[in-house]
Amino acid sequence: MLEDWVLAFDTWVRANAAWAAPVTFAIAFLESFPVVSIVVPSTALLLGIGALIGTDMLAPGPVLLACIAGGILGDAAGYWLARAIGPYAVRRRLPNSCRRAYAWSVVVFRRWGWWAVFIGRFLGPMRAVTPLAAGVTGMRNKAFQSANVLSAVIWAPLMLMPGSIGGWLAKQLGQDPDPVAIGATLGAAVLLYLGWQKLQPRLVSLVKARLAASLRG
Image (cartoon, rainbow, N blue to C red):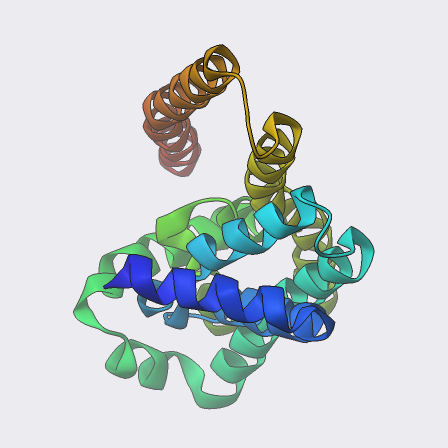
């Protein structure tokens, strides 16, 4: 079901390239807005847009800027919302699946502040609640926005890059590719994917362990 939805989206973007930047902005906004990122397949959609960039069907500049802007405003909106409604309303409205990550994020924010905002964008469990935790802990707007902007500038190209590389490789192979080249490309892609799948949990565990050790200290 999800694969069909993503394929239909990819087909639509191909036929409406002029809308690529506004659509990318909306996807990045939803990916960064608290809790919504859990139910919207934003990562898969951004990978698809990246693939279209890699095949030269979309101009990279406007799409990248739109992705950065959407990420910044998505987190900023969540932060301002939390500041407006307060911690009690935030906790009461959070889905059960987010409450543990939210509670942990609040503790981290009270100790780490700026770095918690920056790192939180790159960690799946924290990304869904990072702006809320920053808002309810009373983090100053200037500090939050500086971490928000800097992390989005790094995060956006990282989200688009894997799809762009895949699209570029597909373009290099052409319409009648060499079977050996296909095998080598697929093999390299599988190795990269398996390596990332093995490395990602270790990176997340390492960050959490360092944060927990700092909090205990």
